[in-house]
Length: 448
Image (cartoon, rainbow, N blue to C red):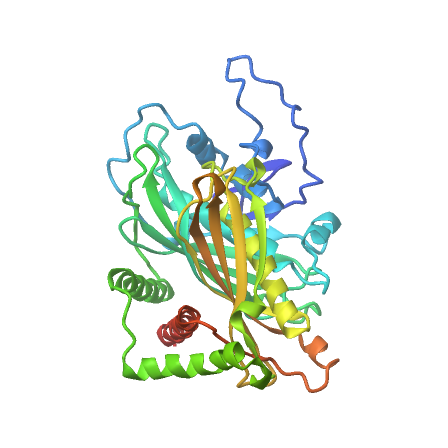
């Protein structure tokens, strides 16, 4: 990153790191800056652009890339698209942000959870915001005369927590573009933090892979993005792995919904057998099992202007945050003990969510794994629906899949703890379970 700035201090960076400051410490009064005399009275300070979702990280990122974001908010009229694609290497998009938790009490309190760790939901917001900034930087030709591209989150391939993240120790997120297609961009992010005792150097606490797609800001159609030339051996390996994942996604999109063959039909039948006992003979059902529908939770909200991104749509990080909070609550109610987040298995952004949309988030436990008694797994699905009562319509906008276990310190307080098995009551539920299990197994195969 060539700029190092916070809402209160814009300076040229030496190490390419963007420091994050608490929003309270750097807040600006809404009308502190009067409209300029040149007539552009609708232009606001960056801290308010465009009256949308704000957090310590989004504010710092937008400040650091103010020139690019200004062009996105106010593109030149009738500007032509970029005429020639550039070739860039991963180091040119590499960006990092630093959380000074050890010295900034207010920032620390904004991110603290009840277990003195970093709130995962807020961290998901920040990861999405940083990935978006990196993709914008890669796509920009840094010319003020061309039409900027719009980049939107298409999916999250994987987010894996490798160790607990303390809120008392400084935290750093580093990311860069690792692969590009015609209009797709994959960004990999790493969260690093040293141990609280200070005896260990920074180690990776979390990894994340985001997929963004570029759209022409005038036509809305897919737009080509700048090429990527990996230089180091590690960058080349990351590029090849991302290419394999891209080909897998294309095969999944291109293929029709597969029919279950004999072996898979037997799996489907076995999965449904216990569920039918619950429905037809509930007194004889296995007490260690529970119907999928009985694990469900739901919440709803009206999407507000303060939750939108620079393109006027609802900020993807905000949606992930809300989905995570519901998934956490679902795992908590299901297990009866405080859950511990392990992974975001996959997120699909199927359609944009707009200001004013009536959004319903529905969650359930899809399946559990108890092979390892020390770390039983809870797979939670959250599906977001954009609901339009006046049109009597409901459309899926996002699908999220999370994996939790149970916090070790909570498990020791409950002797004989055991997770219940989740069983489907319908064939549709059984198919969802099997498809998710198969997808997780396939993803693990491609990562090993």
